[in-house]
Image 1 (spheres, rainbow, N blue to C red):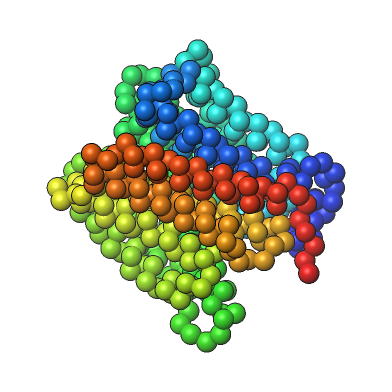
Image 2: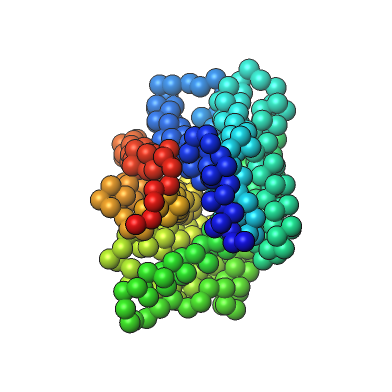
Length: 403
């Protein structure tokens, strides 16, 4: 019995809302809505016009709710969809999926209203989803003997530990927005992008280019050079987590950035200009080496953007654009729509890229930072609210029949 057959049987057995028929549906939709809402709250918070009942300072709340709030939802949606394909086992659907979604929602409520709650209770509520997800998906991978993807679950567990460290730093009075918890969580996610993106970007590019006819194709993923590139990035990120301002960290980040630009050059991204749904995967990934190079420049003393703006090349660029790219492609594919980007999809890609560029420019021209932060925030909101508007109906309806 194939995974397609068992998945369809599970869907037929579920008679409830389509939203709970596969993991990507609730988590992508709610994650996008939270990304837009959290930014809509953050902009007036930054201007001093709004105060939330949270124990976190405004910058710490903003950093936490992007990295450990929004991103936890997108990781959950992706892995709950991908792991059944990796293992050949049944997906989580129905009320168990609703329970996982409720855990994520409880974390958002707890952090937002943490000013009147015990720190231990807030942390427990916020950590619950990733802890349950790591156990659940680890069990599936072990039973399915899909050993090559076990490191992904290890990175997920590390992401959860980073969130716990973030909560501990915040509760102890440290500035968690620049603490080790945030760096460790960001490093875990960048390694996820490097590992998973290193498979899907060249594979999806090859599939699309093959349909276009003869021409240069990407190299097969996960060759020796890819493993070398992953090792260099891992070493650089570990150095950054442990010693973020050390000269050797800057050198390691510069090397990682150059190696991953060379890695990308093997993926034939320059041939994908005609299909934004494929091109955006390359654009999302390129922020990983660009962020490393910008971070290296800041550490070694020749930076242009400022450390915060350079880090946003990773957070808003690498994570923001790569997740939006995966969300749009996965939603189209798993709901039975053609794998091509329409005007609305291209618009939300453009809005997110503009948001990243405006945020970087705020570091270059601090005298205009207020306006640029507002422009960046508005563009970010447009991107994720646009995703919810365009893709929400697909996520809420049953899969359409293949023509």
